[in-house]
Length: 384
Ligand SMILES: [Zn+2]
Image (cartoon, rainbow, N blue to C red; front, side, top):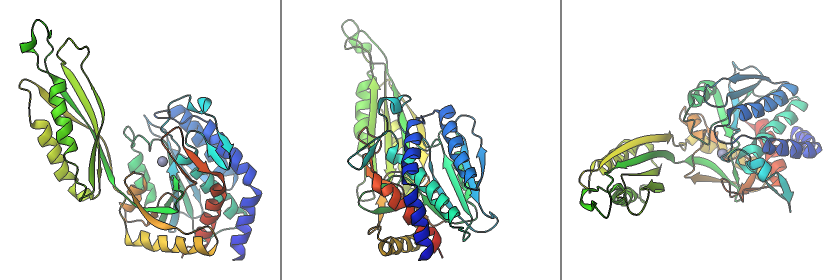
């Protein structure tokens, strides 16, 4: 197609600029709960969108970075959503410690894959399409700043869902997989904390009066892990344990923080019931236990309409020489869940391809920054 070729040419001409923007975004802080810094990234992206003819607005969040909206075209018509997040899981100062660098065709740095590369992809696909006069569908960009903390302190989820009304399709530029997997389904997540309150005592002079919170929580760790049901696809992880102070005092306090990945969201109420039963059961007389829910993230549903969209993207990718794609189902959560929740066909992990995200070995394959941008152009041009 002539239009495809023209868009690819723009991308090819912009390769250096794309790397520069990638470096700039990785260098800018946007770690956990960094509102001021992430809002600065948001303004940087907004200025890019405005420069290429889009309109922008911020939806302000009190305790979290604002949600950035970019719009192209008449939003009263069915539109396409390009979405993702601006935050990373890394603490403040990480970009300075581990600056953006490219080595042997791979880019490194905090958030290089998850998902600052994805932001560059969606921005440059928009730039290329604007340059060739794309008019087919209105496009809405939705970028959030607190995805990595599950929107704990903000109303970003309701903002996403409000903005998504009227969308005919959504593409999320999350971490792309090297194996060509495009995510069509994600498990749901429930994180919770269990605290045990016992009674401290001198273990030499007064051992019989101690009530060990550690002993009690040890039983609970095993009971919670035992709730894992591989067949149902529900897996528990007690990922963090803390308690006690010194070896010569009965521990008066202990806590665990747990994570559940849940295949079928309909079973969650029943699973929660099982967790509560574990919490209620006491092994060490005289201890008490408290359960605190922390984060709950919806599952991304595998919609028939998403699978149709996938088939279309797969065909384009093969025809245009961007490789074979396959539909992938994963346990990691993303905001794509909030689109499928509304019945909007959604494909996730459309971003730059790489691996080891959420670790210091996170990398992205530089060439895929360009190929995925071109793929997005081709998909938007072909979308029925
Ligand atoms: Zn991510």
